[in-house]
Image 1 (cartoon, helix red, strand yellow):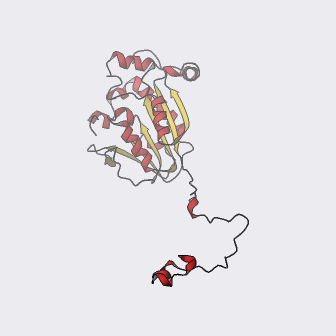
Image 2 (cartoon, rainbow, N blue to C red):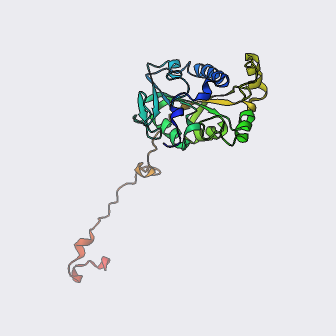
Image 3 (tube, rainbow, N blue to C red):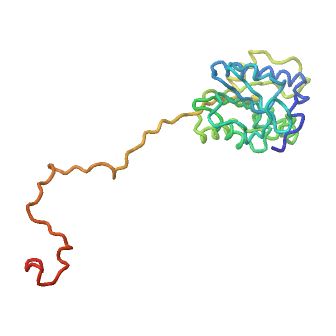
Length: 260
């Protein structure tokens, strides 16, 4: 999958700035809350974001694996649109800005849905294309945040999840800090709460937590296989003799007068 650089496989340099550090701290808090009720055998993090292993450490499943982009090392290396896992085999999938980095995000989302088990959980984090951060991205001609190919809106992703028949469990918008490193100290927790309540559209990021549905299908018996009941009961057999047409293949004089 083209479009990801070596800097996106390791920690991008801007994430080590005060702004990036504050963003990672906010994302860890949001993700820790989302993973509280997710248990099971295995969790996948598709794509690295921040420190290696920094997000999967929050998992409460028995095992947690980070899948790196093909050719960039890591515990598991694969094409994100062709994961080397069986269908319906994973309890949870985390996409930490993976769709922001992917040139074909819909393929990555569909593949994540494929590997999830029934009732499996999908957690997506991404940058909002609008708001203050969206304005900075527009002003920088798409170069902010660095290494991000596109910023998919949370409303667009909600539509995609609906098409995949996934049930939205949680939707959060967070991180209301100005996209400037030298802007003074980080905002307080109360400022974050005010932003989530009064101006959520100005948030820098969002988190979507969805569940893969299972539909119980009851087969309908075809109507042509049903036995047809006679109205008023079964008719009595006729006493008239039924003669096969093959018995009249002889000469014409052999045909009874009533049958001529």
